[in-house]
Amino acid sequence: QVQLVESGGGLVQPGGSLRLSCTVSGSIFSVNNMGWYRQAPGKQRELVAVITSGGSTNYVDSVKGRFTISRDNAKNTAYLQMNSLKPEDTAVYSCNALVVQHGVSHVYWGRGTQVSVSS
Image (tube, rainbow, N blue to C red; front, side, top):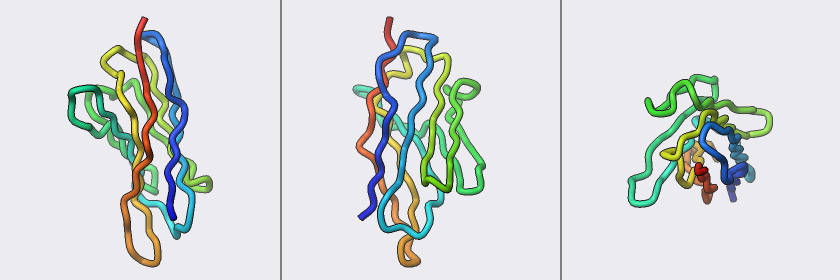
């Protein structure tokens, strides 16, 4: 069994910061790409940021310069540092991971964590 557990969400004022964490645990050989997605009420889920096992990153334009994705491969954990938060960043943030098990790659998802930006 593979589990992804997110943490770090909460309520923050505009301009504030939050740091999300996503840890992969279970029977895995390796973790390749890890990504953060978000879904706001009434909107489609969108990819926020992705990081490869080698550390290459990519971001949606709306968060460039404000969010930073990173990872600790030894801990199978990805982080999303979110600065200068705006009300439009309010959403449920979920992580996913491309996990290799017995030579086969599978995508797993966490359950999500709520981020609310409001004064």
